[in-house]
View 1 (cartoon, rainbow, N blue to C red):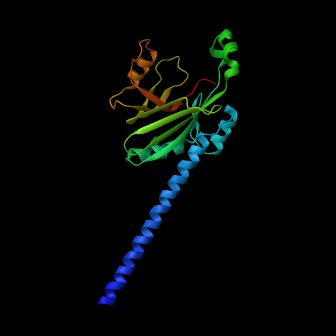
View 2: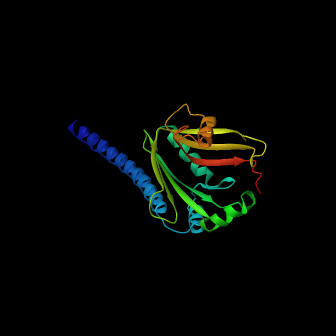
View 3: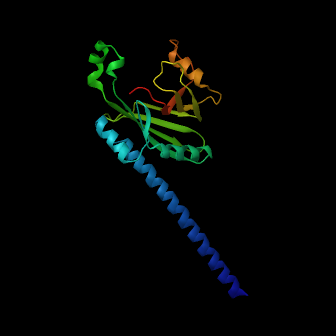
Length: 211
């Protein structure tokens, strides 16, 4: 009987050890992934080099017409955090000037400042979201904030003159009742502090008509 008990205890210890090894392996993989995202986030380079890095790394990339690559990575991130599971995602937002839709004076004034690329590192710890934003050409952070919720907004274009037929955006907010209309109204308001505290981390336009 003692021998059987000893064998059972040894077997249980082996099972627990294997279980811990598997969990540690998963944690190591998660840590490696987070470290890789942080490494890319901290890379200092030109906007075009950063765009190439983002594409090669499989990051969600956002250009004038919306998400141009890495959409499945974002979908996985959102599905994960929707279950209350910690996760991180790094996005790249690339901006160029549209000469056809601005005055010649403003274009001449701004053209040497573009293109620009901003990295958005979004991390969810199971309770709240943190977001850090950095322009690819400088080391210092451009923006850093925490939020309680990540909301998904979809809908038709706000007017017939819009360059897209519908929008698909994910926005970090502190108010779970925030509306897309309220966010847009706050952006358009000249009153300081108007609208919701928010940060748009994903933006996509369907039926793009800007080309």
